[in-house]
Image (cartoon, rainbow, N blue to C red):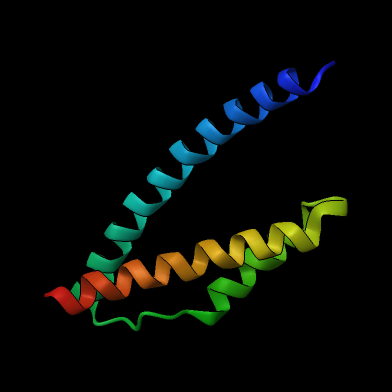
Length: 88
């Protein structure tokens, strides 16, 4: 297999990641609305730790990288929720 074939596979994965990211962010918008309507706090550290532990448990040798990836997703999600909650 040459480098171009590998890069092509990476491009395909990146497309799926983008689709999943956009879907996740749409869900984040819904969570922000729910939190607003129900007077919930932005952060839920228990939920965050549950997510990160699940990621660690299911990532094998890539656990450290997966945790970093999901930590970034969580931070982006909180940023978006904060943006939406402050706008209203």
